[in-house]
Length: 99
Image 1 (tube, rainbow, N blue to C red):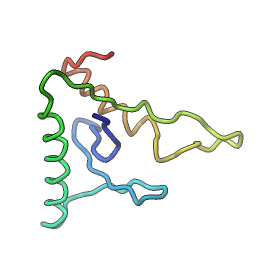
Image 2 (cartoon, helix red, strand yellow; image 1 turned 120 degrees about the vertical axis):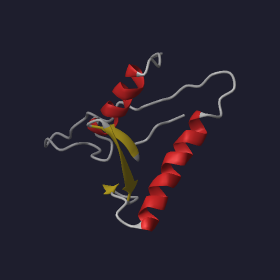
Image 3 (cartoon, rainbow, N blue to C red; image 1 turned 60 degrees about the vertical axis):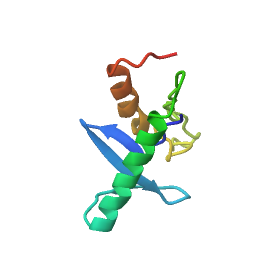
Image 4 (tube, rainbow, N blue to C red; image 1 turned 90 degrees about the vertical axis):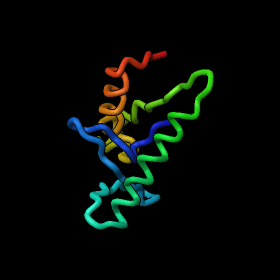
């Protein structure tokens, strides 16, 4: 299972994000009932994926893209390591083995 930056563990809490399809992640706050339903759906999607393994599972949390262009800008600012580090550390602290 590939864990993307749409659901991230940050500062002791889960954060939910949506990607605009081009270049930006937007945090989803759940201020309205329909937004709360969307967050519940996302959380349930991860729950379903995590509970379907029968003989084992590999969870891949990308390390992000640390490369910068020659002018000093991020090569891909939609895949920054900070988007993945909290989730990786959370899962590792649960006791999930790194392979």
